[in-house]
Image 1 (cartoon, rainbow, N blue to C red):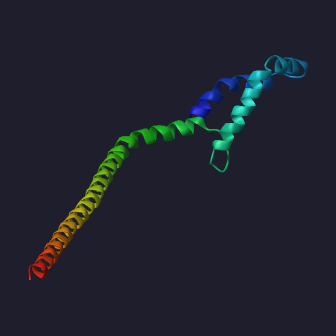
Image 2: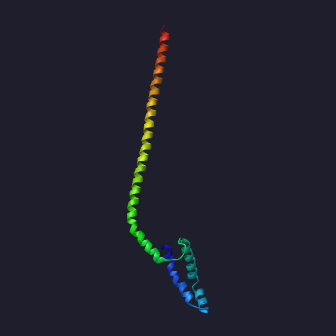
Image 3: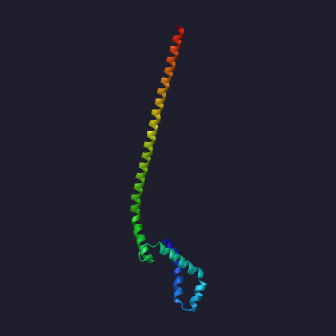
Length: 137
């Protein structure tokens, strides 16, 4: 519809050109070169957008379809927003699950480090005691 609105003001120049005949048409075409070139360019651009097999420019049909879609829009929007809300919730839950797994892994590593550190300290203390015993004899 936006492309048609750009194209619409130039339609009158093309219609007026084809009402004239002979030399008066040539004079009119020379006088309105930019408008007629804009008409041709915008018309081709609009035709390239049309997906119907006949390729006709039918703004009345487009407006009816647009009105129909505007009526359906609120219902589709509410369904869409509900889906987006649910997907966002799922994404938050997924992120929280990953964060929880990482936190549990970190805690597990920390516990294992403290256990290993306490064992190494015990080994050092045991080895010192053994050395002390050997010297005192």
